[in-house]
Amino acid sequence: MVFIADLHIHSKYSRATSRNMDVPNLCRWAKLKGVDLLGTGDFTHHLWLQELKHYLKPVSGRGVYECEGVHFILSVEISNIFSQNKKVYRVHNVVLAPSFEVVEEINSALGKFGNLASDGRPILGISCYILARELFKISQDIMLIPAHIWTPWFSVFGSNSGFDSLEDAFGEYTEKITALETGLSSDPAMNWRLSKLDKYSLVSNSDSHSPSRIGREANVFNCDIDYWQIKEALEKKDRDKFLSTIEFFPEEGKYHYDGHRNCGIRLHPKERKQYKGICPKCGKPLTIGVLSRVEDLADRQEGFVPDSAIPYKSLVPLDEIIAEAKGVQKTAKQVEKEYLNILSVFGTELKVLSEIDEDILRKSLPAKIAQGIINVRRRQIELLPGFDGEYGKIRIFPEGPQQQDKRFGQQQITLF
Ligand SMILES: [Zn+2]
Ligand SMILES: [Zn+2]
Image (cartoon, rainbow, N blue to C red):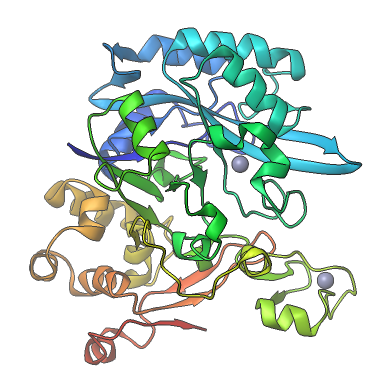
């Protein structure tokens, strides 16, 4: 069966997350979004683990759990902060496990390297190599996925905290890596520019801190909702079973361009080079974003598509489309009302955004909202790239909906 999986989220026990990140809310929102399989997040946290055990029922022999018709896969994100060769590294890694029994073993092993109770995303003072060694000592079933691999401060390729190669981080365990997570600020096309990543599946997850954000990035599989089938599909990069990913526009992510948030300086990699990486306002080194970092490590030109590439779709969350169509903030009450209205007709958000026929959208939705969804599908939008921790911005109706109509058929994104 075809299903949608979001493997990386956080619970209410992680820093800066919504108090509503609990199992009942996750179930409700998974159903609204159309996410069939959700990572639990934070399984190293004892209180969250208790809640998971209370709510989730095992699906026999499948390595996954279930609650109110939504499937769950046990997951956690580890923050590895360590020095190696006299440099400090900070790398986030997602870990998946097939059962509470394996989770208990992981927690007792990792508990030796940091305080697991302090945060749902625990900080451990061990290298990626040692993390992998400890995990695979416990079970070969465990999945290890370096998280949002390009973000500057907390990732394996991060400009401020990472490595130039997976081997430098994971050593002999590099070959045990299940997949790589592209993160919100990069999309598969950017990653296709590095030939050494060809052999890995590129997964996309929401890394959500609040229930309404789950599924904003996700993976589409065609197999049973089964831990080992998913693992095999990812490891083999099986294009019959790992069908596609759902992506943010990477420009919308917080670290796409280079710059300084406090100085209001936002630069394309080429402009950054002109300034030699120094902020023209404050004179300090700029925060180097994902696009620059990809550019630095890439061995292929922009636009290259490897034979083994898994396709993807770029989407904008429905509440953002509604809000812009109505000219209000996405937190406005009328946005939520319209959102729930639309879903009561069509079922799930991901269906509305990517599957429902344009004609049907036009017939059943307010004209401007239908147009907004269609504009996103045709990539006829304007983007103001994010930088130095500030989310990028999107204009879904760059020239007003009437004029927009004339340009249909073109494939273009404008940067504003
Ligand atoms: Zn992270
Ligand atoms: Zn500055």
